[in-house]
Amino acid sequence: MTTVHGISVDVRTPDGAADAYLAYPDDGAVHPGVLVIQDGFGLRPSLRSLADRIAAHGYTVLLPNAYYRHGQAPVIELPDFIDPAQRPEILRQVFPMIRELTPELLRSDVGAYLEWLAASPRVAAGKVGLTGYCMGARLVVWAAAMFPDRVAAVAGFHGGPLVTDAPDSPHLIVGNITAELYFAHAGEDHHMTVEHISRFDEALAAAGVRHRTEVYEGVQHGYTQSDTAAYDPGAAERHYRELFALFDRTLRGRQGASVHRAAEHQIRRDMPER
Image (cartoon, rainbow, N blue to C red; front, side, top):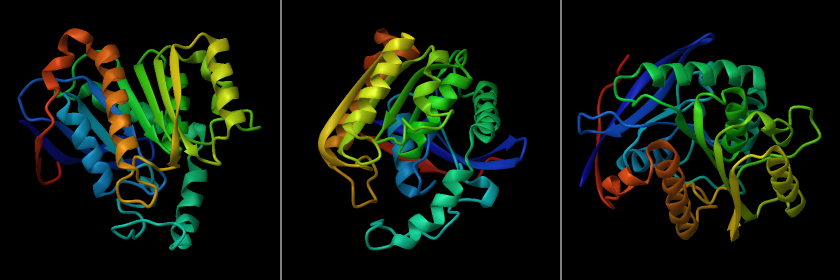
């Protein structure tokens, strides 16, 4: 049984301090670093549990509050179960904050997060892995293009929009990426249509980016998020299998991949580390 230690930390950025959740195996060893970029609803208990699950597999995981400029998480009041169809005001609250996360701000923030991970005594030397959900999947593409020398692997789940008419559309900047990518789109997702997925794949192939994309048929945008109406347990477990396979292969190699296959883990969450 892997014991996971979870603590709150502050990450200094050019614009202040981003509150974040840090999860790592409580074994006294260093582990490869992973940066998790949230979905649109923000840092909350279900995402901390997701970070714990990744940490239990043998990684030191940093999960920042992307909306820290608006205050510490939770930035908005969220119900225990999120159904946007029943609570449309939630989307009205988060959309302005999502739109504020421009490439310029993202470069500033992700640069600070990567520096923090590099300086942490709990993180092994070397490149890190990124995984993003919903809006986070779009942001990790930008981040991988901005910091190609720092990122070894990128995963995105039910992400969007990845193909737009804007000059900074994610599919237009993939030529800078050196990491290996895995993207899993939701079959029932208007954010990423069949045409969008095809154009994203074509851009990755044209740029020579090592990648694999899949469509999880029959599931909705948000299928990994256990506190939402879109959650699909089977697809969520598939996402973990693919994510761990990617990280095991790129961050520590196949030899160490079997060390952290534990299906169970214990969580310890302590007072903030500032």
